[in-house]
Image (cartoon, rainbow, N blue to C red; front, side):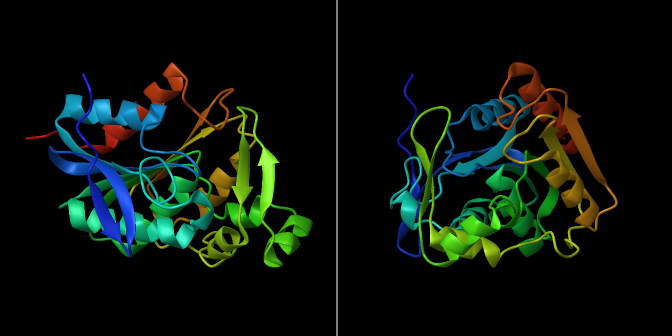
Length: 247
């Protein structure tokens, strides 16, 4: 059965594709990683969980990714945060559980800071806050600071680009140098063998969060994607434990 035609919202003249499942609160909000989209394995597994649980769920494609308009190379972290915030404000009501994967975990932290009255809890899946800082050598940061676009081949084929504009935007949104003033429950799910986001980033994030209710689940042998069936199950159990029973 084909899916219904994807709807869009306009954010600063950027057309943002989204899928919204109607249901009970809290609304699950899934934020994908860098160069990923709302049709990935984790997003679809969470959407199926929301359907089974009678919960509302929102997922979206950042500008330049998936079904959204624009060019990926024009995207910045600030743009994608703006789009995520607009989608939450325009399309959802009531309590939220924000679930961010990789870079989406960085955006999720900022959303929780911007809408503390609405966010009930946050889940970071291989969350990558501040990766424009720790993810690049000083030499590469100098090249980005000079306006260069970096390109590198990725194992699954193709190449990953990092523009100077994206890097500069990330440097303006760093979080790990200071306390992160989130007081809601936070769950971090991270692979023991994540080569893209070292496990130490999860520990640093945990220590910087103000909330006393922060837990880090480390998956033995897990890499960055965390898309194996047992890894998906761990993510779904984590989310389910944060959802109060629907009356």
